[in-house]
Length: 344
Figure (tube, rainbow, N blue to C red):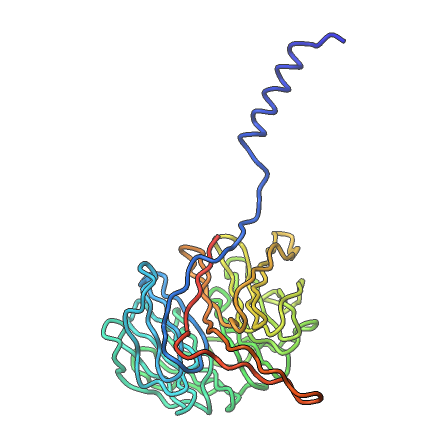
């Protein structure tokens, strides 16, 4: 068979272009390192100040401060009894710690890490959120089933908003003028109007149940909600319509969205992070199940480096339970508290 030199040359050129333009592959997250903290005690939310290059870890009665560029502990914020979360207002040089055991939020100087004052809230403030367009702080009170809103600069309480159940995490969408919070015991998300400090909408999350983690794609107005029934839900932040869902791990706690990569993450106590992508047509699919560590349920994301940070401890071997007895809960090994770092 004779070969046409023009056709053969075109084929070679096509193959060369294909070699230079490989098919797109999803980034595979992997373990990078562990940052030792060593102190003992319970922990809760982690939060990143990308501009200030700091990671804040709520840990027992303190907030541990980690340098994101050096991956080392550089300080702590003391006197935060039962702290759950820490929010940052970079332009004000202020941070806000929700102190669950004393029903207050500490206003903290980010340079000195000293507490300037404390604001009284409802019972057991859990998630805390800074709304930059109005320079207001929202403390979501778990047992109080309410949100306390106060001025970030002065601490003056502006409003107390009654909620339909126990609030968990919160995020905001300044373009829509909304702050969103998931309600764990009613399997809902509430949308709070920032101008009036009233509930504008309440949306069901089915098929999601008992939501915990929450984050937002503010550009496309999409909410990502991690739910306790091993599900991550995507819904429209303007209409509240559930658009899609994917399976997630057991014991989902935190959820994060990376605007730079378009990936959503839900971390679970079973030692996994579900990594999912939503395309422009709102097709939602799992692209990776990342193995982490047992009990590493809380997580945050650095949007500038795309790294994930999860808190964890080592556990002793669980004792063998007697026949018919409930399974014993494993004990943490003292001095092993750490932050695990994962990257792509």
